[in-house]
Amino acid sequence: MSVTPAERATGSQTAEQHGAKKNIFPDAQRDDSRGNNDPREAKQPRQNNQPRLDKRDIHGWIVLDKPIGMTSTHAVAVVKRLFQAKRAGHAGTLDPLASGGLPIALGEATKTVPYVMDGRKRYRFMVCWGEERDTDDTEGRVTHTSAVRPTPEAIRELLPRFTGVIEQIPPKYSAIKVQGERAYDLARDGARVELAPRPVKIHYLSLVNQPDRDLALFEAECGKGTYVRALARDIGRILNCYGHICGLRRTLVGPFGESDMIPLEQLQALCDRAASGEGSLADALLPVETALDDIPALAVTRADAARLHRGQAVLLRGRDAPNCSGTVYVTVAGRLLALAEIGNGELIPKRVFNLTGLTASSGRNERI
Image 1 (tube, rainbow, N blue to C red):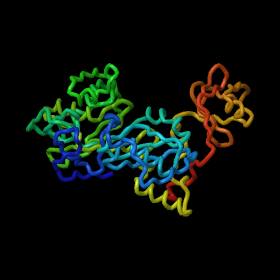
Image 2: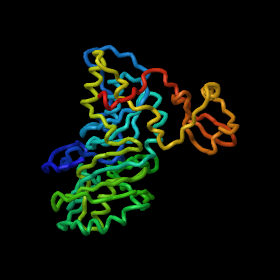
Image 3: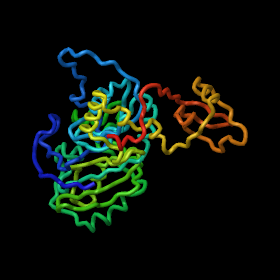
Image 4: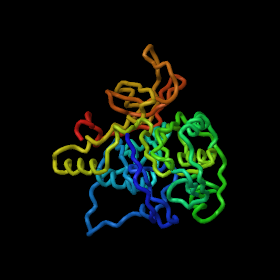
C-alpha cells in the first residue's frame, strides 16, 4: 500500500474540538479507541414514509474498507440496511477519521466477534512532529510544541524500546472506564483524567519513510488493547520533538487483511446488481468460520451433531477421539455447527450456530 501525505489544511472537523488540522493521510484512520458517542450516530428517521423492509437471516462477514468520515456504528447500520439483515455488529471500532478494515458480522457471525477482536491488528500511521495534542491526533488541542525534528537514524534507534511487551499509558481520550465513566467523556467535560499504565504487546514497529522533516510513516502490528496514538505521543516525547497521529489505516484485523476488504461503493454496487437479479449478496460474504481460523476444527457424525444442536454433551471415545483439550469449532458434513470445549472425555457445546438462510458462496473475490 502506498501512502502520500496530502496538503496540510486547517478546518473545523468537529464541533467538540478547537480548530484542529484536517487529517493529512489520504486513506487515514485513527486507532480503535475513541468510543461511539458521536451525534451523527443517532438513529435517523425514515424518509418519505418509506415502508420497512422485511429483515432476512444472513450469516457471514463483510470486511468493509471503511471510508474517512464514517463512524463504525454508521457503517454497521449501512451494511445491515443494504443486506436487510436481522443482526449485525462490528469487531473493533474505527473512528470517523479512520479508514481500513472494519469487520462486520452478520447474523450468526456475531457469535464469533470476540475471536476477531482478540486477534492481531496491523496499522500504517503517519506522525506529525512538532506538536503534541490532548487527543494525540489531529482533532485535539495543542498542548506542547517543539522546533526539534528527529532524524531517521534517531527514530530507528529508539523503536526497539517500543517492541515486545511494553507498559503503555492509554490516551485520556479513550473508551476506558474511570469509576464507571468513559475517559473521553470525563476529558471532554474538563475533568482531570489519570490512567494507569498497562502492558500491551507490539509484535513489530518499523519506520517506513519520512516524506519530509515534519512527517514520518510507520507500520506496526500489535495485540489487543494497544493504542497507536499513544505510540506516537511517547515516541515524540522521548525524541524531544513531540508528535501526534495525523493519519492511520488499519490493514489487518485478526484473520482479515486488505485482500478481504470491500469499499462501500463496491458493496453498494453488488447489492444493486443482486436486487436486479444479476448477482447474489452471498458473493460479498466471508464464511462465519473465517473468524475461527486459529481454532482447531473437529468433524462429528450427524448423530453427534444432533446431540450438540440440542445443547447436549457428546462422549469422545475410541481411536478416533481427538487427543487435545480446549476450544474447537465443530462441523458436520463440512458445515459449521458449534463452538465447543473438549474436557474430561466430553465435547461440550458452548455456542451453537443456526445457519438457516443466506450464507457465503465460494469464489467471492472472483465474482465481485
